[in-house]
Image 1 (cartoon, rainbow, N blue to C red):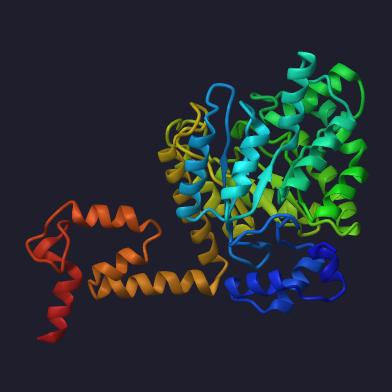
Image 2 (cartoon, rainbow, N blue to C red; image 1 turned 90 degrees about the vertical axis):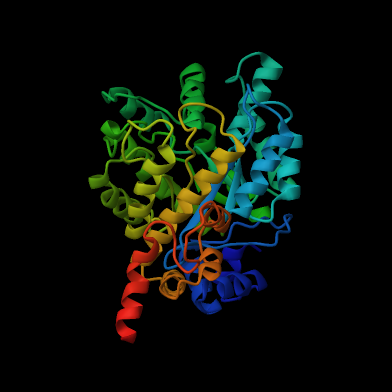
Length: 427
């Protein structure tokens, strides 16, 4: 049975107990959330990992890190190093978005080395195989899709991004829009091209029941992809995006009825004043299913700093109820990310997730801030560094300068406000 099917029978599994302890909630409460479809535990029956997690309502906001080869950068060893760095710096899950080199070997290595849940976007491999076999990335059919889904599920992939909302109907809505950026999702673009070329319905939509069969067999969580997400803040929350979201809401209900765990992916590029609306719309149309957002990026003018633009949006999104943040690195829109980019992206997204959790009044988040503030007041530098979201960087900065007095820093030196008030109180 899947975790959802266990929950429907009021059975608390061992993984539910383990995750509940990490979350600081009662196992029965987590089971109830899973039963309601408001939380998921992405964990394939064939994948043994050390750090399972739950994503959903009232739980801490989780962070995903994307890795994977490209057509220009396909060294598997480099991607595994990125995997290790992402996990070391706190990523709760990973997605392998590979499109270059040996995709099967890459996925095997990721599943081997990852101690956290692993997701994929199966249409990438479908397109790559079609290109290799037929010299055309859209010369594939539904059986090709189901074969790859089954293959990846059997290997142990924990969650799939399925672009099932780019249908003939939603694509027509997009074509009528006067979007500045059009369609920017790679998976969505593949499906849109397929629909036009074959003049048929998206097979991820028309064969959704067969996809549910595979997901149910291995307990693969479905992440229903936002193929029509905006690629510019000027395109945010338009009719095409909302049309797709409504389709995903219907499909999510079908998945839950079949005992398949499901979450919904969201934008993208969204201005600050539309973030709350996007969260509320997803929760309404998708019956409270966990919401997995890319950023969102709140402006389009910061190439090289998009880990910051996305963290700003991610913090707001999390505070309004987003459950899962997909990181964005400084390399977004510019190049294939480096190991350093991955580290910066993970930490920025974790800061956003934590800031959101403080607004959600999560005790774990509040206690963390309380403890580091107490260490700062005591000028306990060792503890303050240990409690930092990135202890390595905090330690590096602390050691890079030598204050005249060891109990202060070089910013204020002898005029440290905390020390001055401590001395004032002792007079």
